[in-house]
Amino acid sequence: MNKTIVLASNNAGKIKEFNALLSDMGIDVKPQSEFNVEEAEENGLSFIENAILKARNACAQTGLPALADDSGIEVDYLNGAPGIYSARFAGEHGNNEANNTLLLEKLDGVAELERTARFHCVLAYMRHENDPTPKVFHGVWEGRIMTSNEGQEGFGYDPVFYVPECGCSAASLPKEVKNQISHRAKALKQLFAAFQQQSSLL
Ligand SMILES: O=P(O)(O)OP(=O)(O)OP(=O)(O)OC[C@H]1O[C@@H](n2cnc3c(O)ncnc32)[C@H](O)[C@@H]1O
Ligand SMILES: [Mg+2]
Image (cartoon, rainbow, N blue to C red):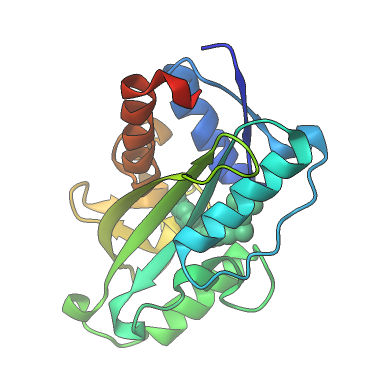
């Protein structure tokens, strides 16, 4: 595959994970910052709508196919919050430390069994701005919210997300491990399978 795909994200943590995963698949992706793409307004009401808005915006501004990721964490005790508002849970967009502190505060004293949560990653791939059939893939990673921050790897909510299959926080996992089992890894595996089945997508 030698066609360039624009990665419609400005999140450095996501971009690193995409680069690791997609280069393994032989796909050449370039972040939208390389094309000076102006950020899309994320005013959808679901991960799916926001992912499509971001992909369409990047296609429109570059004339290239684009892949967008809209993701976040759903906490059962908070009736699904922060959900699609994960990046700005504590007010300021992308303030991971404040988001994690607020989440720990909101779950203060809540028993382990009630701390269940999951990461969602929705990927939208569009061949061009007017693509009538965006390809959408969804990966989920089940876990629960820790009682304090743990670990230095990853980004975002990783220090407060306990991964039962590993017995530690997502931020304690080596990146190669997170990139095998995460919500993003699961969605990307689906994308890759679709590319293999349908070469006209690229
Ligand atoms: O929209 P782009 O430019 O891609 O960047 P963003 O940070 O605004 O991304 P989202 O709108 O998709 O918001 C997702 C938020 O969910 C969190 N998140 C998503 N995936 C995560 C992961 O793998 N580990 C930890 N936190 C994650 C993180 O805080 C993100 O800021
Ligand atoms: Mg965003």
